[in-house]
Image (cartoon, rainbow over all chains, first blue to last red; front, side, top):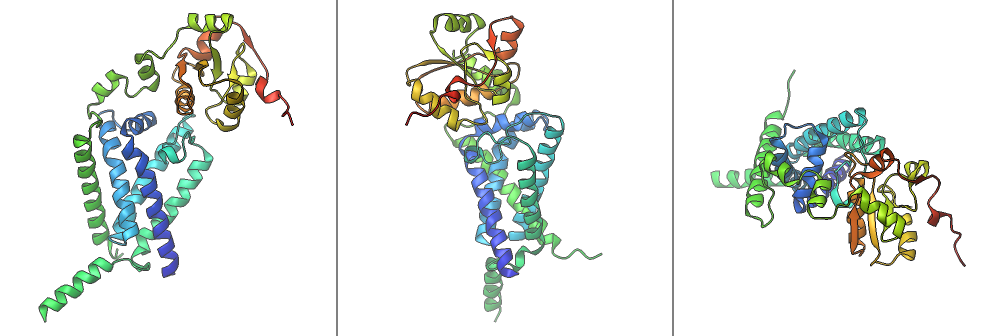
Length: 155
Length: 177
């Protein structure tokens, strides 16, 4: 169980780090993606384009590092719910849309059954890590270390 | 119902979201080509509309230019729409390099047309940006003279200009062994 959670935690972490890289490198391309979804009020579009990728990156790094794992997974869960809703709404509107999920890694990926299913599976992984991530191998080492230090000082 | 561990989760999550946002804003402010944060400014620059951006850079062509290219062979026409749309009707003499299936059609195209060839890419017209994606990929592959016909299939058809149907001519050639 702890091993499986470890694998899931790493998988989620890698996915989010990879997803963030191109968006951070090319905000001028990502803002077009965000705008195309037509879901945010216009004034928030550039802000989202600038902040979201860094939130993804930090969440991915936290998951990989085993620090604040469940909180990071909560962030990825919220992001995934938002992305899936956005993709679903646009798919239902019949719009042909570039998913924009992984930037250069999977360019021109259309929003459709494949990307929706894939993100749905990732969402399931994310929920599992949110609820049980603390039990994965290596998670929580920082807080344990801090606890031991403060116990040592108290003696 | 007890909800164990939600406070620490929410705390880490909030800390993460906050630091991410701050980091993003700071990096954007400091980097040389940061994104302007004003939506109106972005829209005006054409930054949100890839087609408008290219037209602003002088890379857009009008219907008349496409007519000349077709008549006099001054440029090769590239249709960026999906294969089925191309086969149902396309500009006379245009080749199909769909935005959603770039690889193989491009390889066939590349063997016939050298990098200096003047190209004009189009797609459906209207809000379609698939032509921009194919244009960017062509540029990335080393083609030096690639322009855009923003009006696309829609404008061409409405103007009653010459069209033809059927598969891409390059895809029909048998491999020479």
